[in-house]
Image (tube, rainbow, N blue to C red; front, side, top):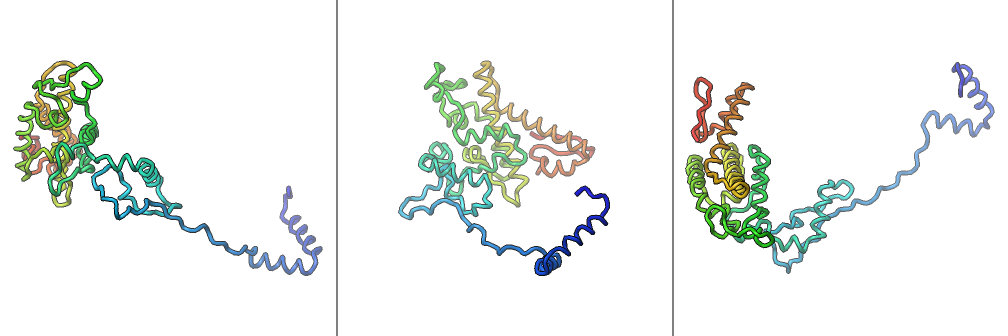
Length: 297
């Protein structure tokens, strides 16, 4: 009101109040004492739940497909996470395509044994570097180039650049003769962890369980680096024509990672944690009493 003193405003209010009729004055006193009357409460919108329709009992189950509709549960629409709604809409729009597509191409090339299945979460476990995890993910999806695939639309031959055999996906990562030294090395390493190396373990990865978490994470790292070694030595052979031993590449990758982790642990005074994670059972390395790294790989 532009008034500089509260006394003037108080006098104006007293004059206005005195000019009001008695009924209006009583109402004003009640409002000032009890507060403004609230409108009656109205119920909010009803709870809406959104989710996939129940599967028809007559339809045969398809447990190993890309479709995730069977995993999605009905959720309250007002509070549903955006990622959940996006997944629900995406898998509903493409339900026919996704339901007829297997979750991994290896189910035909390397059928899982009883109790085995792709361990997608293990591909990006704590110790696995992202590039190696990406290669494992692409391999499990069959999204890696091979001679048989590239020969369909490029003039390159469909044979393996190392042995001359027809280069299929299974040949590149399981059957080529150049892989045998690497597989023997992995067999020896995993036996010291009380595990048996197999093509299924290489492709599908190892599930991480609580009691053996340290061992499982370390084994998944070795498997990821082995697949990265196969991939990168093949790329180098195609690009430069240089023949590189994938077993030696794998050994060098593991040694480099151990040295880097040891230097970091030594600089942060956490050698005990390094021994717990990386020197497990002395399979890959150990720490001497003087605090130096001893590689056993």
